[in-house]
Image (cartoon, rainbow, N blue to C red; front, side, top):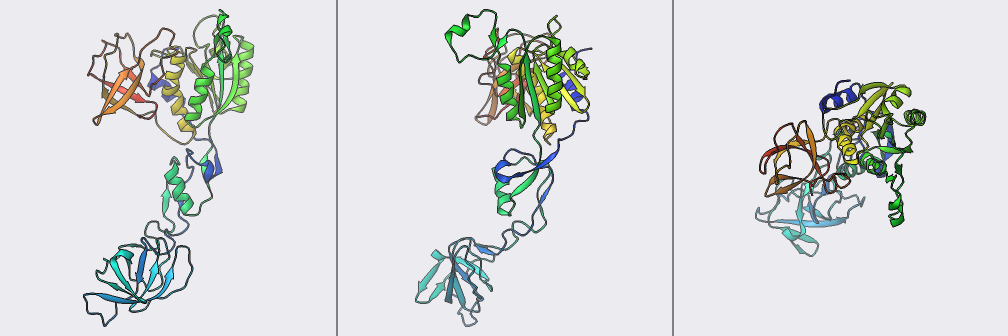
Length: 407
């Protein structure tokens, strides 16, 4: 197969992809979930007209007032949550507290500091403007109004709104289940940092399982860990079949190259997948493979940790977002280099970088590059997307793709 660009590969993966099934979750489980249907208000908010201050609810003016001040006879007190039934008539008032339901007949609310109190009555020297210090029923939310659209990502603000309107649970898209494995006879599980573990010259610790599991969860997925697979085609085919049965997406690292012990393409085919691509026109991550089996995808990333993580952000994140009811790749924009890139490129290359905002301007710094790459992504919150050509100098604008928030 001819190498595909990142955009072509992404389009191939997203073609025909639809959000997963819908489930109901309680509000305490809703943070970060995506609404699968619009939410409409079951009633008005606030549900009753209420005071916004500690003060007094005023009835109609006394016809005998001299116009320079207003005297009201106090007929009761209404606290927040009280169901006290008070009706205000001409020249009467009631003490009210913030959030309290306004008595019938209220025409205005005045804060406590704006009146003079005396035995059994108050004197209002400055009558408040109409509507000030009070909120009418339904002023913020009308009954039946769409308050949240389908596709909304639920956060604390949305949860607050839903709870205020009486919702206990909502309908969201199901989280994608990602069956995750890594391949390689040389890999083993981390050994708690024991010095003796470093003397085995034929083995290395497998970091991709841990890094990609964290990334999958950060983007709304649930991990089904298939573990470390040996470079045995039969074993890998069996793992792929299991992954397709248990997960919505199969993600494997390693084995995507063209050597005698790289079996990912053959394993995908053996598990019933139709190959979409086997090579990309990009670095790092040139050797990547993807296949479709029915309505499920299989993606094979490079075994090198920084390359696997670069392609995760470029290809897997859009897939996870689409499965979870969200659309689009990560945000990208132009920003000036704070430091020059160290070398020219023969093809499109992505660099780990850190973006900062200084004086209202974004600046991007390429992170140090190491031969093994295990430290490449430490401290990164972005990728720099560079086309083939000369190394850009300090101050030149480059395309930046954000992978996490700017601190």
